[in-house]
Image 1 (cartoon, helix red, strand yellow):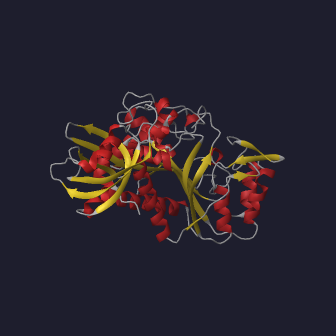
Image 2: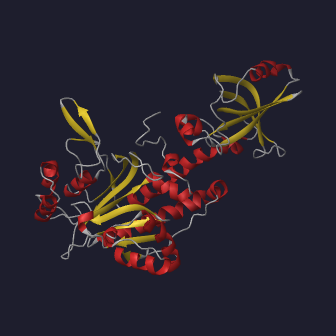
Image 3: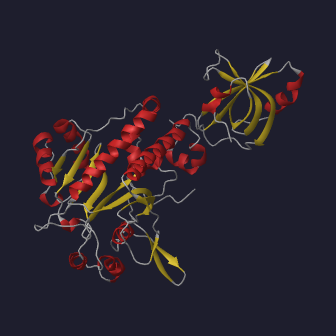
Length: 438
């Protein structure tokens, strides 16, 4: 098993093997200092030039480019004067496992003046930046705790197909691909198959997987492929049950994340993880527009008040803080004609669903789903959906529990958590209208 940099303190006075990137070399008259880096940190390797048994190692280091990878065999010793955690390795053997052959396209240790497109062109170099490495550790840890909450609440993780025989949810904003002798489509979401699992009696399900949207949007928060954290659960009484579960899940995950990584997130990103109070505040769409106008003078034409504008989302963060001293805000009472046909409506035609706004950006659209066969067929017909959703409507013919769910964009969630300017930086490999590589 590999020993990592952050574990070395457990191996004082023991001979070990340690592997990593050559981060820096200081070649002085009598000694060589080699800094090795792995995903958990750095360690200093000290080679005394005057010792005969070190001649071969000295020669290796003399001819070694930075960012090569090496494997060190040596003793871990306590060295209080060493700035890197008071630890150094005294090597007895060095093996070069790979050599860096060319000059790096940019200095990944200082990205302030590097064009973002250049960084994305060489993402495999950009991601060596310590801040980027840690960002993905934060994202991974956050997802771990979201999953943990769901496992503790009897959810089953599923994996649904991303190639569909019919355009999911609607005929727009989907990517069509050649599938042997016919067309297929990349899934916009796992929505239909989450609900199939509910109809099959799975009870509660979730999935963390890619989704695809053929939107020609060039904003800081949109992508043509992104990672979605989707869930659906059974036997709810109303969409408020869905809201409550999401609020509890996010609060649980943020609390656990702060306990594990809060101090380092503060150090690296300058961001304090704020644990939200339960319950999250809730306002109707109409009341939000009314208060935005009264408090901040924000006016929009009535025809735009059927959904949240980008500016209304941004101002809703200030509203949530001023009115509720809270970072999150649930928005309810959207008109049904602006939302998917599978969302339940009440007798007045009001959508039984919500958006969740965090720090001025929508992170979730959730709802109670329509589970009654006659009603969902009627909704689909009103939207002009026929053969494309015929297979989906079959799920509800043979009994289906009342249920609801939501989805959270993982990349957008990370962007907001760490105050990163764009999802281009929080996606491992960004996909947008003008980017398909690397």
